[in-house]
Each structure stands twice: as C-alpha cells, then as structure tokens.
Length: 218
Image (cartoon, rainbow, N blue to C red; front, side, top):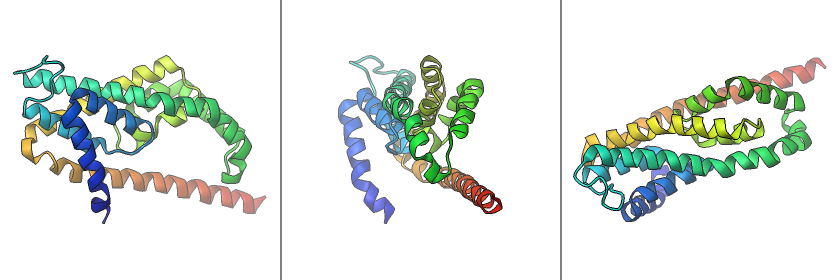
C-alpha cells in the first residue's frame, strides 16, 4: 500500500534527476534536508546509476570518467543537504524557542529543556550533526533542533556538509556498482529506517512515561 502511494513521487524524483542531472540531485537532496522526507536512499543510488550510464556529468565535465561522475553526484547531493538545511535551521532559530516557551508546557517541554539542548549543541553539536547526517530519518530533521538550540551557523553548515558527503558518495557508489539493480538498496535501507524509527518512538514513550510519573508524584 505504502509503495503504491510513494510510486508517483519516486517516478517524479527519477524524472527530475534524469532531466537535470547533478542539479536535480541537489534539488531533491535539498528538499529532503528541509524536513520533507524524500528518500535519499532512492535519490543517491539513482544518481549512481546515472553515473553508471555515463549521464551524471556537469556541462560535459566528467564524461568518460565514472569516478568523477560519482564524485559530482556526491558533492551536489551534499550541497543540496546544506541548502535544504537553511530554511529548517532558520525556522528553528527564529521561531522554535519562542514557540516552545509559549506552547511547550502542553507537551511537557520547558525552558530548562531548551537550555539543556542549547548546552548540548554548544558542547557536542558538531558531532551530533555529523553523526545525524549519517543516519536515516534523523538526517532529515537534524537541522530543526540545531536551529532551536542556536548552534553556530558556520559550524552547523561545515558539519552538515562533512556528514552528508560520505552518505551521498556511499549511496551513489553503491548505485553505480549495482547498475540496473540499484533499486534493491531502497528495501535494504528501509530496514534501518524502521529500526531508527522504533528507537525514536521508544525515546518518546520514555519521555512521556517519565513526565507522567513526575506529575503523579507531584
């Protein structure tokens, strides 16, 4: 059922990349990083498949060199992650903290939670963004909490690019190696999506139960 619902979106994504090449990859990865969950596990392997076909060139640059075409796909994918992260980060930076301070009490979030998040990103923000960009699901949304915590913008974008590049290059390389069978990667990575989704759900349940217990004690 879900695959049938997603198939028109995936068909559109493939059409965009086939028509626009590296710029299509950058556009779609930008959308993914703007908290709109387009699957990078489809975008980047297909970019690698286009490299396999010799079509991932930049104004003719890279023609005849698969390694250069994979590099072009990876770099443009990572640049897209940076561009797409800008609106997500800025929404968090400009509106996230006031929104949490005003409405957070309804979901058990307080100013102290914001201060903890701010301190965490001050101390470990680079590592959090870098690792987050290497994880399915998390990579799509990491810019929003970084913005809410007001992580330094320059550091945020440097670590975003640094974490996104190996992810994009790796998936493009796998798509290139698999050739016409590049679609098998999507099903494989969806298992990681499910596992990470369950971990996040478990964390949410723990948060709710912990606060309910606190409310009962008080």
